[in-house]
Every structure is written in C-alpha cells, then in structure tokens.
Length: 474
Ligand code: GLU
Image (spheres, rainbow, N blue to C red):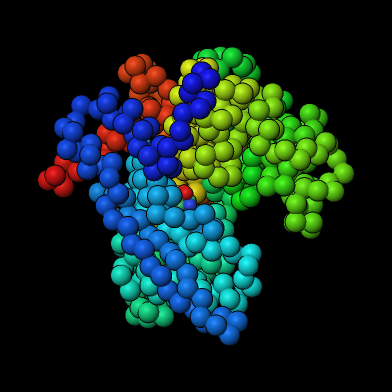
C-alpha cells in the first residue's frame, strides 16, 4: 500500500485512459475499435484578444471533441485558471462515456477558458464570453446539430444566455438557434429543473444504491438513506443541491462540508441552506457559528462517515490520501475526483465507488431534455397537462360515488393535477438514473469479473459506442 501511495500521479487524461483500459480488456472487440473510441478526435485551441480596461488582454480557450459517433457532441464550458488541454480532453472523454451509459444520444465534448472569473466584472465577462462564442461558432464548435455546450465549473445560466444570444446574432435565420447551448435561463428557452439537475441526479444515484440491499450490505452498511452520515466536498451548484436534497428530502445527515477555505463538521447534521447562505454572504466558511470549523479542509475527506461525496475538482482523492479514506461508499459527483492511483487503492480496501460517469450524469440528461424542447419549440406538458387533470378529477369523482366517501383533500390536490414541465423533467431524470443503475448492476451480475461499478459503467458504455462505430462502417 505504501508503495502505491508514492506512485506518481498520472495526468487527468491518462488516469481516465487507465480506467478505460481496465474495462476495454473485458470487451470482445478488435483493438482498432477500442483505440478509436479511446482517443480524442480533435481539440481546438484558440487565443483571442479582448480590449478591456484600456489594454488588449489575450485569453486562451479550448474545445475538445472526443467522439462523434453521435452528433451533436455535448459537454460543458469551464471557466477556471487551471483549464488546459489535458483536462478538457479528459473531461470530453468522460462526456462520451457518460452520455452512452445513460443513453443520451450525444457524442462527448468539453470546453474551457483559462480565466479566473472573479477577476473580471460582469460586463467584462460578457464581452469575453461573446468573443469566445464567436471563435467557436464560426468553426461549428457551437452549433445545434454539431456541438452543444452547457454550464460547468465557473459558468452558469448567465454565460449560457450570452452564448445563445451571440450565436443567434451570427445565425439570425436559424429557427433552431436556441438549441446551440443548454443550461439557459427559463425565459430564453431553458428548461425547468436544469440548474438543480446534476445534484438531483446525484440524489437519484444514491437512492438507486440504497434501494438495492445486497449492494448496501456489500459496502458494510444497512438500511436506507435516512440517518446516514454524509461528507460533501464542495458546496457549488452540484454539491449544494445534492446535499440539500439528500438531507431535506431523504433524511441523511450532512456531517461535514468541505470548501476551499476549510470545513465545517457537525455530527448532528448541517443545515445546508443556512450554510450556503453564510458562504454567499461572507465569501467562505469562516465565521459560521454552528458546528466545528476546521482549517485543513482536505483532511476532512478522511473523516469517518457512511458516504463521501466529492463534488469539487478532479483528483481530490489521490495516491496521497486514498489509503486514509474511511468512507465505505464514495459517490463521484464531480468529474474525475478519484485518480487511477486512488481507484486501485480504494478497490483493494473494498470501498464501493459510484462512478462519475453515472453519478453526475443528471446535468447532461436534463440538457438533453432542454435541447429536445428547443427543437420542438414547445414546453413539455403543455398539450397534455389539462387533459390529465380532467381524467384524474373524473376518476376521483367516480371513486367517491362508488365508495360514498370523500377522498382526502391533500390526496386530491397532490394527484389531481396533470404533470407540468418540472414533474416531467424529474420523472425523465429519475427513470434515466434508475435504468442506468440497473444496467451497471446487470453487467456486474452477468460478468462478475468486471469487479466494480466503474468498470461495469465503462463496459456498458463502451459496448454501445462500439456498436455505433460498427454501424458507421468503421
Ligand atoms: N458540465 C456538465 C457535465 O459535466 C453538463 C454537460 C451538459 O449538460 O452538456 O456533465
């Protein structure tokens, strides 16, 4: 173990490739196809200038296209200083595998801009984003049928709105222009439930795990989510929603939250909205009155708990700390939070890892719904909602007539309505997450030598990609 701890960490892309190779070894396909799936098809690097604060500033951006076995290709755009080619290639590969696993009909892509978004004000960021969009759109690297970006670390609805608008100005007669990007605000073609989608998907993934008692027992746990002690790293969009839903709706206790400037530990359970409010007001954890503040945030990853949810950056769990991790279950809400080194150490220890390509697939799944909505030009539920309501109410009336008793008003209020867009998005996401879990499980049951959930996830995903490649005549 000690030897593994000191192994050199691979780059993010190499780490993803190591995990790919483990699964590909189980795949009965020619090496040529495996290699074609593994490599990143193309990566475009651009340096562009924007005149700001009286001088010209040069920015560096990337868009990697990993696999075009299905088009458009899909994946977020990240704004962070750490963005580099290796990272976008690794993230694009994960998008390919993720979309395939959850049966979302896209290839994989990812983009990034090496920038600290906090260094620039809103107006400056808008000018930078519009210029960045122009650089990609003119090469069809933003395009409703070719390449559809979405939010990622450091970007959100605001940036997606600028991208959509900049694209529309370049293509004013394209009736489908709005489908060039997802994660837009509702009023300009976004979809209900997209902001919370990745966190909601993490919740559904945890639910899927806990509804399979054999899987829970294998991890040395028992029972359901209620009362389970969860440590969350990162209270950004994904970590915040996952922690909020798991604690408020499923009764889990968030016993620690790790952020950039330390961690808050509270074995009685942290009020996530309260803590998030504090962070937004004060810019960090410091000064939060409840629980215990610990300055060494990363050390809290090693805290005793039932479930550890890394929802921040890649490589958070690596050769240096994997052996000390005490959680029996890790749910990878971030992309690539466990390095290949750490993965080997944790597998040896028998830790169950619910892999990123599954656990955080909620975002792209709801992006898919948004893209379909944009192409159909109609809100989900608009045609059938009142018809459903009419039928439900007629059914209630008949039930009351037959039994001679009134139904409870709460029951009628809850089940009388037809489904609106948010109900349908949640239903579609829930179904997607449950089906994908069942797929991974089934693969593990029929091919036990796959050994772990990540390898099973890769295996399911690669089977479908290989089939697509073959039908393309490759
Ligand atoms: N950036 C998110 C991810 O890593 C969402 C991608 C998308 O919606 O296209 O999955």
